[in-house]
Length: 291
Ligand code: ASP
Ligand code: MG
Image 1: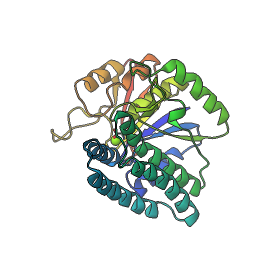
Image 2: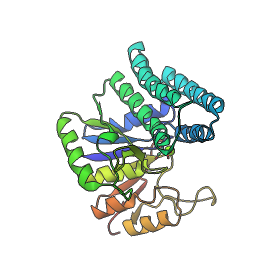
Image 3: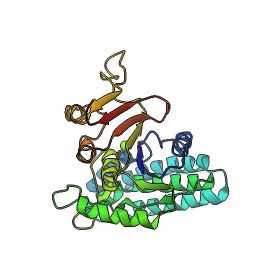
Image 4: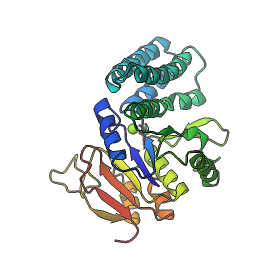
């Protein structure tokens, strides 16, 4: 079993979803595919939440309408057959109906967490129907059914592991399992999340829970660089670093991985590969035990 996580840009356009499909269908090894929300979505949901906190219902509605227009266009360009367009669209419409239902109602932290979960719930359903339309058998598995945090908001491995094992057993015949990054349940069984950028962390927790061969983090840059490519001109990807070095880099603010991601992989000695969806043949970076 391998775990492959694709970030917001990797699922940010229909063309990019096609690239993700090409990558995960290169062989028929069993995979759990973790997706972020379509790029920009979580930021928009945060902005909608801010308006709802302030009681600015009209402004919130405007932002919801704007976001919905983006999804309408995305759906039109994603599917070829009306049947699959309709399936993708109903999944998205259902989430938007719930978002719209929050307008004019009391809005607390609890509603905000439900609001923030919508991005990953939509990207995964859209992608799953896209795979099905293209003849790739897959099943959606729901992060809210197995990913959880305890009272201290720490991932609850003793709960995650058996739940996921049961789900995998029920899906033995499926080579491709698609799931949501970022979202989880908390100790009160409410919808919660692993904090911004948390999809990496989801992938690493799943990798540890199923003892995966590796955890692949697919983004839009070719691995970890020896300098910050946004600041320094000529940077090069580092082919291999140790867990300790990666943890240190993340701790010091290297923006490539959610900082908690390394820990579960390190504890269970599962190599983490950083790869580039836009350049799938590039070697990227391997984070593993010793050099
Ligand atoms: N969609 C969430 C965020 O933007 C989680 C993620 O992309 O990892 O923070
Ligand atoms: Mg994101």
